[in-house]
Amino acid sequence: LAVGSLFAFWPVYYLNSTQSSPVLDALWVGGIVGLCVLLPAYYVVRHRGEGFAAVGLTTAGWRKALLVSGILGGVFGLEFVFEPPVSTSTLVVHIMTVAVMLWEPFFVHGWLQLRFERAFGTVAGIILAAAGFALFHVGVLGLVGLAGLVVLGIFQGALFWYFSRSLLVLWPLYWAIASTQGTISREVFSMGDLLLHVIALVLTGAGLLWLFRNYRIAN
Image (cartoon, rainbow, N blue to C red; front, side, top):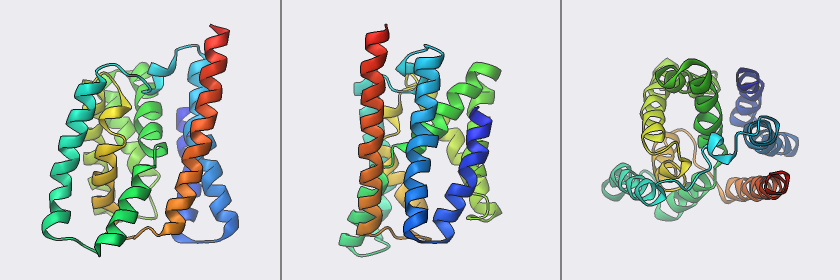
């Protein structure tokens, strides 16, 4: 199911990155909410009964996770202080847009990494998730960019594993800055993009809350 969701998401990501239309916007929101978050969460939490920690939704070690996330975000953000790539207002909108993209670290690490880790072990899980991270960017990035995502994915995967497999070490603090650094040179997000991803985050939150309440009742 993890591998299938990865290949199913690739055309959604490709179309969103290369074309624009209201229909594709709807497909994008549906893809990142349903395919990247809610389907994996439902499968792991309800179908397999493994709980929310099995998809990286845990408060274990949250203080250290947030501290390290903030420090790493600050380090990555130094470039924006000394050599801002765009105007301050544009940069802020871009960072805010990336900051609400829970779907990406959830999909790559909370879903792919933890499924692969369960099946093949920790090291293989990290490497395969990093390869998956690069895979759904095929057609959007060149070989150098894809290789860079694999390296970054391994780093993030190791960080995620070390800090109790908690997504808090990646999202939102680290992800907002690090992902901005990687995307703003090829794409600048607008207020429209921000609104679209806020809608996706609200739908994601509502779905996870529903799952949490029903999961608590069922258990």
